[in-house]
Length: 274
Image (cartoon, rainbow, N blue to C red; front, side, top):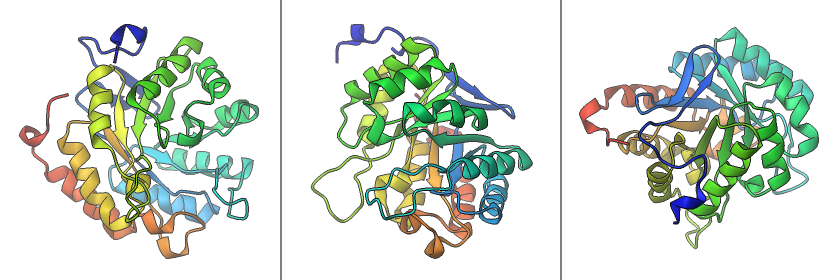
C-alpha cells in the first residue's frame, strides 16, 4: 500500500488514543479494552443484567444494537429509539461507555444523542455519505471492516471519517467472507496486524462475528491480546439460547467470566509489541 494515500491515519511515532467517558481509553499501546454486550437490546431487564455482567468482567464499553441490519427482513430488527434509551441507562448505571450502530444518515442525530461512540457496521463501511455524516459529529467512531474489504479500503474509509471532522476512530476486524463454511466468517488476524502496522489508529477484533461460534470466541480473543492489538468486542447474553439474534455466537456468563480470568493471566512479556 502507498502510505502517501494516508493523510491523517498513517502510522507515526505515537499510537493514537480514543477517549470515552468514565475514564475509558482505547489504544495508545498500553491498554487492552473489553467491549461487550448483547447483539440486540431486547428489554430493560436484559440490558441491565448484561451491563452488570460486563462491568463485573472488567469490561469498559457496553455494546449493543437498537437498530439491527439483518440479512432477513423477517428477523428481529431492534427496539429503535426505545432500545437506545434503555442501553444509555444501563451503561450509566454501571459506569460503562456505550457504542451502538447507526445504519443511515437519517439516524445519526438521534443515535448521537444517546451514545458515546458511533459504530459504522461492516455493511456500511463504504457508505461514504454515512462515513462523512458520522465524522461530521466530531464524536468517536468505531469502524468495522467490510465483509470483503481490503486493508487499504478500510483505511481509506477511516480517512473519510477523519476528513469530515473526527479523528477519534477505532478500527475493528470482524471477519471476512471466504470459501470456508464451517464458521460464519473467517477472522483475519493477518489484516488486523497490517491495519495496526500501517495506521496510528487503535485496532480491536470482534471474534463473535469473526467466528459465529461461541466456543471459538474465547481462544480468538486471547490470540488478539497476545498479538498486541488494542481490544476485543464480544457478544454476550444472560441466556444465549433465548437471544433474539446471534445467540450461537454469544458468550454466556460463565464463558465471559472465563475470558476475563484468562485475559488477566496473560503476562506482559507474552504480548507482542505494537
